[in-house]
Length: 111
Image 1: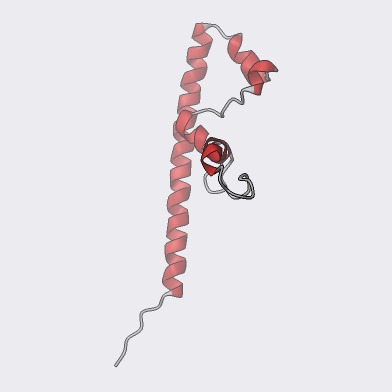
Image 2: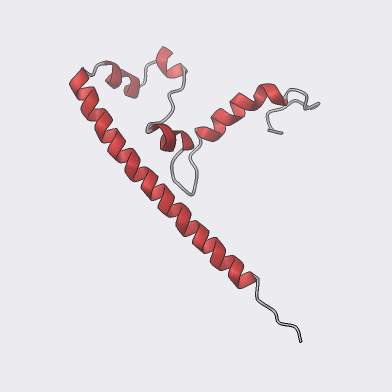
């Protein structure tokens, strides 16, 4: 937030949507996906892509209903797999963190 606000920092409330968009569309190291993709199953479409159509928008517009259904089913299966892998990676990271803290914090007994 401090990077996008002005010097007086009195416009922070107007910057929240921009900051949230940036956070939700940035690939995270742990999950290797954007939070937007893990929730909605596809990458976010930037409004500019509608003005200057990208390959993704062009192929989506040219699909008929049956092809769109098959494509959506395959995307849904891929999304479930991605969510499973992201959840597994989070569990592994939590176990690593727990082990690291266990090594740092030793039980001490006093006489």
